[in-house]
Length: 301
Image (cartoon, rainbow, N blue to C red; front, side, top):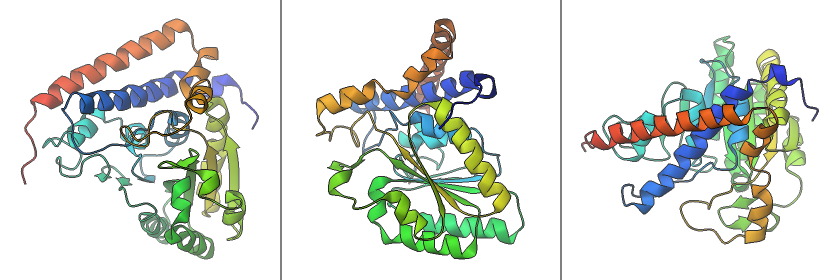
């Protein structure tokens, strides 16, 4: 994928969104360690470039469906770390009044849950509704490589092709289905699986917004203009464990991927001062939000 002129990519705002995801997710893990959070969570650390490159280009009326690793998608779509933190902490001021927790989220055309592939038929139905209503909206659905073992994925691809609906499916291949490496879990080519349904598939391996931003510009434009489905496969890597501590990967492998940390790519397009200013601003914002949320009342059941 060819890089485009840096003046056409809003690096400053993209970095701020990426840093918000990174600091928010890492602070969640700290809060678990401090005994202030319960249950589980699945962080988006290492995959931030995909969310910021795609969702930042959507219109407010576009719809996003996400999975268990949904925080990064939600933060870019709604810029609402306070509502998200309150939800995860079980507070009344949370996105779903503190009753959903880390995975089932619903606000402003954003929907997520932890049932792998279970929401894809819903995304298909929403895309069909947008087509039926002659709207200009598109629907974006995120899944992971592990979800490709679910039959609902292929049922959705089949109907998406037959019905010609404005659905963009993004497969975030982070190389592992929980702790199972992809080579032990998935046979054949992901692209060929998609193309078998006569749906366009694009595959890229990158954590660089200079690559991903123009790729998603074209993908969004094509789905919106053609009112037909498309799939983008982003081969990336999660730098944190699957959830809080279940990490059995080779430490050398993780080290190699840390060199490809999506935040590192901004060093060539933003000054040290800009990056430092953004990081301080985001850290302060999260600190203020955390103090406010901790004082808020818990959800009532």
